[in-house]
Image (cartoon, rainbow over all chains, first blue to last red; front, side):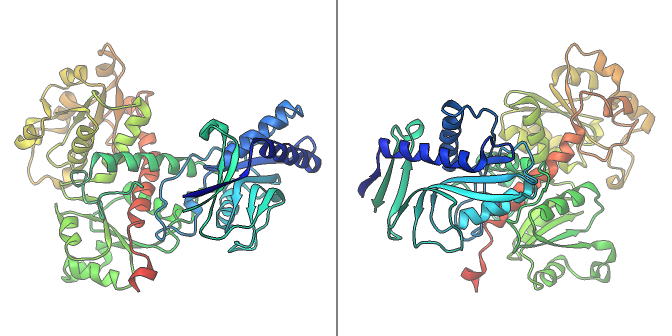
Length: 178
Length: 314
């Protein structure tokens, strides 16, 4: 399998800092905003952003939840994905500005499922999307990110893999081809 | 990827320990779902389920129907009292008629042991046994063991006692299979006329003295006397049954430990369990009911994933 490094430690960290600053620009003290990480991989990105917002910008009390979209997928009985991850949202999102967080935006179907899923916790005022990588020209649905780390053009056979120090031992983004 | 090893849920004896764990793990997620402000997920939106009840049921039927609706399935209900069964139609014909209306799954309760197994040999739909005579009631055993795991953490090595009418109880048999698969020790207690002799072959401890049995156990599952299944008298009087096998506060207080009390419902207060115990803090009866919906959602979800999609079957 061929593998090419798209982003290294330095670039990933610069992007995370920028995304955190953009969130502050739009949501100031996060009084009415909540962050929702999408299971399983969006959680790493959301955790990192939360840490930057807390450590570097003293934003301590941001509401944060984890949403699993397995039961909202549109490919039940068509794909083999059955087992869910934990959903942990102990607040309602009624009238809140929800920021959905995922690592890679590809077809947009996961985000579609997340938009349905989040409604189980109330009717948000607004929903935004934050992604680290946006795979351009590969969308199946009209979904675009509001905050984006980097846009990439890769063909369907290629995979974009985001690695995190806490799980994979390094912060980096790779493009691989089987 | 994990999936169930079976296409139908006909009884606990047909499924593996891995299946049990997969159902419990999935039920954990559904338990979280049914505690959300909006308790519904769209997973089964293109699945139609028929609940076919040839025997009375309140909570099982309600629990299944709620589980199906929370998964967004289309649901049709059928009960024998108002059906063609009374006009002489056979089980397979009745079900095939329902299936020709494009039903994907059948939840069936039937008074005859083995009815679900028989049906599974003759129809394509996925079948879930909601109680077949005195044979099995798998989803009750799943929710009982699930509730116990939630309460105690693990049932391995625990002594679980089932008290009452073992002979006519499908709950007892399914529970024995499920608990033993998970490594628990199972004992039964009741009038010897209501304990079938072959039960010793299942490696079950048999008690005829409730106080001794309670001293042995960590959990007591109190069953109802199933008068509707009794063709003759198995004990002299209800009063005598209560005296020997009824669980009351005095009996619990005589124990030097706190045991967990379960009951599959419906409760006959003052017979197998006193009101004080049924409302006391040692019982998990209402947890069992809540968990019933989550466990049934898990079973429906996991079995529905095995139904072939229309793209593949035309």
